[in-house]
Length: 180
Image (cartoon, rainbow, N blue to C red; front, side, top):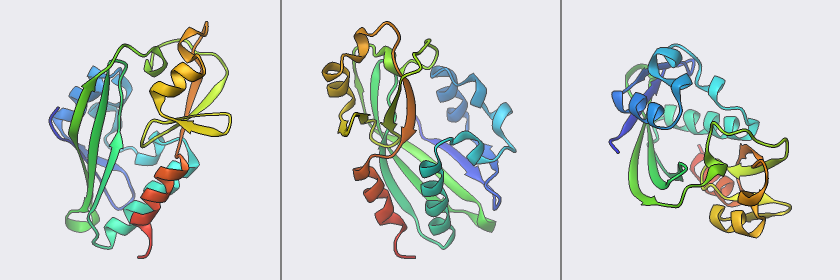
């Protein structure tokens, strides 16, 4: 996987994505987020969870003050675990550049719970946007462990996923934000 790059302007509108963005989108059922559909749109039109939005707003504010941020995160697909690093830095004229590079990609058995095109139940479970842990009841569990522990693959319809931050990732990302 080559580096995925995108840029936002001072109003957080997406003004550039590289060819790898489109390639990645098409390989991951992201026809709705290819360059021809997102250029000119606000980044926050694509982030639904209010906590995740606020974290991104805080990180972007810090970058606009001249900080370069490196953040490790996980971006899994149905057949692979992807461990990535996001670099956020200011370019000229208040443009923020995001670059995601793969640190490690591991194969895994097919996980229908991660398939974006399947029919899901109305049951909602929380998934951390950064580490992909699942919260079931009061515990945050590694994705693979949660699938087995809560029998998520043997349900007639897999649950719907809502993305948020686990406490551990929230604290880690918050450490990048404080102090200005």
